Amino acid sequence: MSAIQLYDFPLSGHSHRARLMLSLLGLEYEAILVNLAAGEHKQPAYLKRNRFGQVPVLVDGDAVIADSNAILVYLARRYGHGDWIPADPAAEAQVQRWLSAAAGPLAFGAAQARLHKWRGVPLDYPLAVSRAEALLQVMEQELAERPFLAGQAATIADVALYTYTAHAPEGEIPLAPYPHVRAWLARVEALPGFVAMPANTAS
Image (cartoon, rainbow, N blue to C red):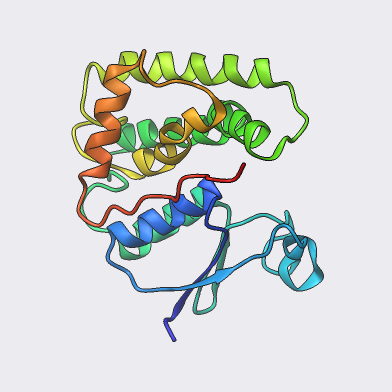
């Protein structure tokens, strides 16, 4: 059994962030499926690992890390090399800026739009689309200036923003108007160790 376990759901973009980072770092792990439909993530045994009742959760020995962005930080610090988290304070601040975007306008924009279209979750869909488009416009402008979100090399910022951006069309948010974003997605997909999230094929 691998020392690293990931409590996971295949179609969760947050879970995919963790899977992608593990793969980019070449780390072996055991994936443990969490049955969200059955409410397993809200049961006492799971809530001991994450009181918010969300996936993913990473277990690495005695370390139990909940929240996808926190998992990215942990893996980069514990196992990373190079510039996944830059050592320079100003460069690291740029990474943190995008982690905030992943937890804010991405989560409440493209991710919610996808959830609404995929599972019919009742929410303000036009507001989610508006948030998604505003973020995509910022990303488009900044990716016109550099190849990756926080600089010249890939960082955990790119991992954090990739999945829900790539799958925005599942929420009926087209990416055609954003050529620099699409070029960035291709650069992330070309990174050694990249793994895709399964497309949502549910009707």
